[in-house]
Length: 246
Ligand code: SAH
Image 1 (tube, rainbow, N blue to C red):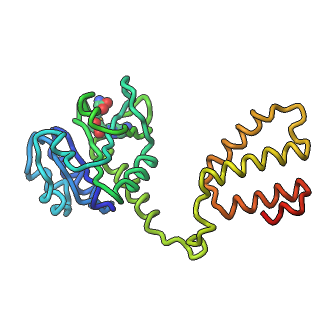
Image 2: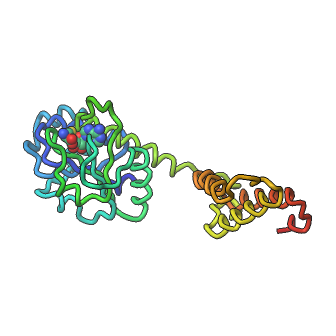
Image 3: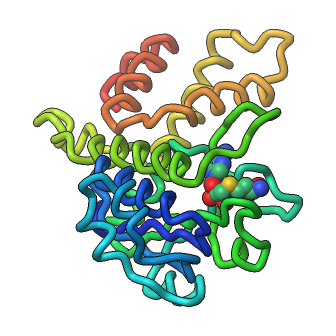
């Protein structure tokens, strides 16, 4: 999957940052580097900072515009040290990495890094689907560009390792697959009815209680098996023996 993810550096001024980026990428198992109009490339300085990641650096593609760098990509993330005034969906690095690894299973992905001084322009950000902001000290938020690449490549590696972990045989069974939306809806109706039957709502507003409980369940990835267990508990609470067969 990581082979489908490219790191794009826009208009980098310092060749040392290009070399350090290649090193950061290779450490984390990424290989595709794209340089948009770099100021000084190839250079001795970059090879010296790449410290053995010469293959990543040597294989880097050089293009003149960001659009060219994004050719063939179906998911593009921009990076920024600050939240922009323009409304972009903002993601945390972990969420960005999980989404990017997921997208890389079926298409090409790009993570775009800006100029050392000025970052990415709004026009460049418009080519991105979402923005990722590494949560740094708000009073000193701007990372060196290669350090920002390192943080995101680390998260990409962790996300990709998570994908590689083989599910255990029990998780592979149909009952342990995620419950469908209608199964979850059915469980909510049952829960609401059960709470009504046992007189739980009392003076509480059932709608508000249910909204909170739905919020709780929506934070879990509930499986079909778990829905069945819960519905069994609801039926037992209702004292409806026949319902236990559901
Ligand atoms: N003043 C610029 C700083 C550029 S730093 C700005 O606000 O964007 C150079 C590049 O490093 C940025 O374009 C971005 O790609 C990356 N970067 C630096 N700090 C970052 C952070 N906290 N989160 C995400 N990317 C960051």
